[in-house]
Image (cartoon, rainbow, N blue to C red):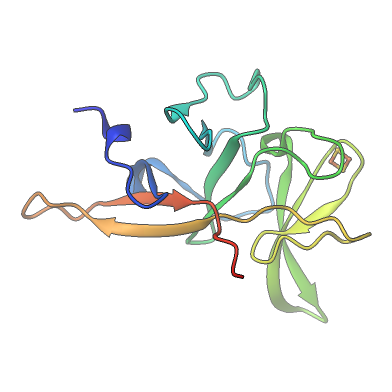
Length: 154
Ligand code: FES
């Protein structure tokens, strides 16, 4: 069965939780991430070669940073660079971790991966919703990762 045929209410399955190794250091996202092309109408496809991702407009980047799953637009909101080439880091204030960020290597801007807020200007990275769902097979300890574009309210 094609796992991508089970999309419901805008949610898309993007793989098993165990397929996303946790990134626990301040490190490049590649190779511990996946990208998917998710057009608003059409079929979801995994980006085969993340170093040659093609058109980024409808792509989401999925990864696990310090135990939490994240999904954000693959395209940098500043000037469309692929954020899979970026680097993750903790956002800290006087040694207290407040959030987590992703630095785009093209011009060095950073984005909060929870809120999407850029460290300069009014740019915002689109942050997707992520759910972990139990598998229906009895005895399975793995889960599936599902993502959805954030719905606009109002
Ligand atoms: S393209 Fe990402 S910071 Fe400019």
